[in-house]
Picture 1 (tube, helix red, strand yellow):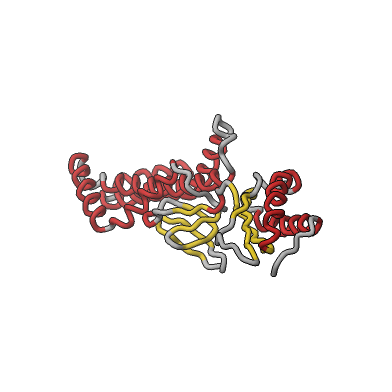
Picture 2: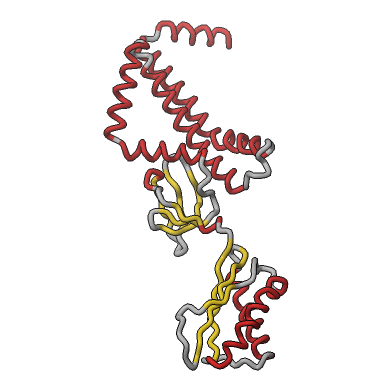
Length: 272
């Protein structure tokens, strides 16, 4: 029974007109492209895991791997459908004509959709560049937010107020990456009576060296400067310190408490 059915299908396929055969072939090409599209995220993640187990694993961050997975997945999808289109065209024209058609179409598409082509080219370049990654806080084209996803055409940013911004990769020129700073700056202003500045300066300089051990997030002794450079009954001294990146807000109250304690012990009154 099954053999007879198969023979009937083969006979029907042989007797089918040429246009029907081409339609079925085109449908098969795009079905394969759709399957590749469905498998692209899995293939991209597997490729990222293989990279992580390689020689560069120690330097590859999870955020970078997530970014690469998104970029590679979208690149595989675009390539699969482009191949499906080219194979479908090859059913109607010979190879030489197909080359001319692709060339003319590419030129026309490049002129008519320059922005779209620019987005794709910029997105492909992100595969090799490591300017930002998923989960990092950045500012691009004046928009500040956390990177949620990156593909070959767009970058998705989640703003602090909750909105989702879709930024074309072709518009990404100047990138401000908040997540890759080496340190955060902490500034504290101390107002001291003019007559006590001579006593306060040595104390603050010595305390800056001691504070490196007392405050774990302090990277080096702070600098004591007078921003205004004005002598009067009250003098403002500014302490500029370098904290570990992202730890400035946590360290500032500890720094204030330490200053208040040591200045009180030295009987140096702070001016309001």
